[in-house]
Structure formats: C-alpha cells, structure tokens
Length: 243
Image 1 (cartoon, rainbow, N blue to C red):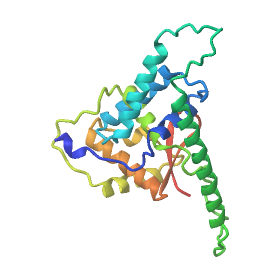
Image 2: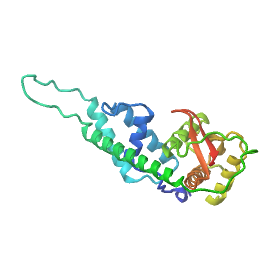
Image 3: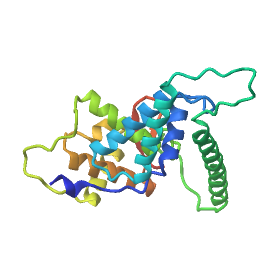
Image 4: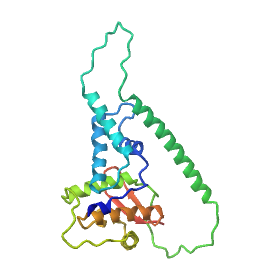
C-alpha cells in the first residue's frame, strides 16, 4: 500500500547543493570541513527523505557512501611524517572540497544572473493602482527558505510531535488529489493574518497526507502562490501568500 506514495521530486538540485546548504546552515569553514559532523547531518536529511518514502536519486546515496568513507578516514590515527623527507600527506577531503568550491562559484553566478533577470523584468509599466486602503503586509523575500530548510523543518516537526515515523492511521485510506490539497493549503495561508506555521499544515501522522501536503506546498511555491520564510537558521518556518 505504501508503494503508491513513493514519489520523485525535481526540486532537489543534487547532493552538492545539500552539502553546500549544510555548510552555510551550520557555518562550517568550507576549507576545514569537520567530516563527522557533515556526514551525520547529511545522513539525517537522507533519513527524512526515506521516512517520507521519497524516491532518492542514486547520486545522493553515492555521496552518502563517500561521506561515510571520508569520515572513517578522518577518524583513523595519522601517520607520523619524517620532516627530513619531502613528502606531502594528501587530505582525503581535498577532492570534495574542490567540487564544493566550484559548485558554490557556479551557484553564486547563477544567483547574480537571476537577480539581473528580475531587475530587467521590472522595467515594464502597469496601470496606476490605489494604495490608500491596502492592508499592510509583511515583507517577504521570495525563495528565502529552500527545500532543504523545509525538510529540516519536517524532521524537527516529527521530533516535536513525537512521530518516530509518519504512520498510516487505521481509518480507511482516502487518496487526496494534489490539486485539492493545493487549494486547501492556499486557503489556509490566505486566511492567516501573519502567515501560517509550517507545522500546522501537517495535523495528521499519515505518510500519504504528509507527502501530498509537502508536494502541494512545493508546487504552490513554484507557481509563486506562496513563499516560505525563516528568520534565521534553526527557527520556525512560516508560509505567506505571495505578494
């Protein structure tokens, strides 16, 4: 029965994107990566994906195996190097470090190009609008929270609600079309005065309900219907209507 809810999401950009997210989130020095901490955090994200029965791309699992291997190498005692010999002990993290730096370089370049595109799109004019009676809305930054922030929020929600895993209830299973769930989420967001807490979109410990809600939220973000904000690392996520 659970096989029906295995899905693949194109929102994930790849294992290097997840690693860079972790480096930024935990303020890790990219030139001196603590492999044990990084590997543990990466595996927690993989575990959350597996809990939701998301179809994880093989490249994520390959990276997980690479991180575990690097973590093991870093835990081994270092061999003493004779100072009289002109030898160089290669850092096992070096190859991963080079890949991460190159990925960050391209990601930052893509961000600059995206911002220039947005600025260019603002050159079009529109008809005058009356702002006299418009209600004050919170300042929202588009795309401020990533899909990995949302996965992290799910993981902490499971812990807060003491859900060791999202179990199916004994109630007769009802399939919820993603379009219907999108309408429900959008209604809740639009009728929340100051945004809706991410946790409040997941009231039931049902795997199917959690996955469909998660997908509906991602689709709404993709369509610029809602935005997800996080004031700072490790704080609660809130969903706002796109303005």
